[in-house]
Length: 386
Image (tube, rainbow, N blue to C red; front, side, top):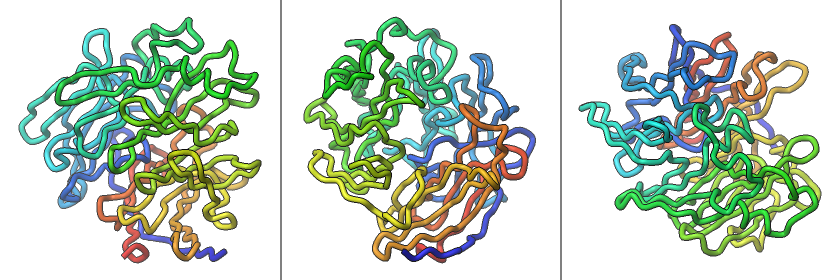
């Protein structure tokens, strides 16, 4: 089990005033040219947002000393996943999107940073297909109630009195036609291979992700259980067909699609916690990095699928988060950075590294508080990834 200490150059790209972050690990903040990086700016870092707290959306210019340009504001955001800020997959050079509010509803704003031209979609997005023609979403008001730190505050959850409602779950959004329809309900999920703990408790879904080809959507189904919550991993066709339970042990954490038919996820499969590679039809699961990748982390594949990028939660002695690259072919782990994490900034307001790739696999961007404020950093990994 090769393990190599390989510190990589780190550059801080945001500065006071304010705190800066991007959000989750499942999308790239870089535009298609590699020149501009998306970011959120907020005035505090040590409490949950209220409905009146705005985040400023902006870009950092990599060719001008990471100069900040403010573009818009949104009162819809959370510490763990931001507000789904990203470059529009069908136009990643010139348009961005983020979740916002429109009256008494959550919505999506599509913005051209150069012209200021805006378009409003009538629902918030969670994950977009790679061609930009479709998205999936969920009830963010229910999510913030059942899993604080991941949903949005400010609007009531109309499903609050229901444990597993038939009219809530995962919606498919057709972006050209603006059509939306429920493809998987919480009631449907609660009826699949039920266990004792599934009864009379609140159910929710989270971590929706498209496969690269747009033919399957994965997600986590959760409900409260002793010590936290019970989690199951599913995959489904965009029309709701071929709903497949991939892992039902109750322990499922972060994951990423390796290709159109395989998902790598941290799970307890067969009684042992490892990264497991699943076939999306549920008929295969094998351990990856059994003696090398020994800790849960926010994992994602490099653009060429040769490398796995992941991090760790803070160790209990030094309160450090570890950043790692794993070379799949050689089963070699490279520890590329360690970042202190203030032990008082925890729970829903914690600052995970949430590492994400640039578009050619040469750079990695993280959020971190190791210098006392919440800021963004870029790590040059080109000496490893080529």
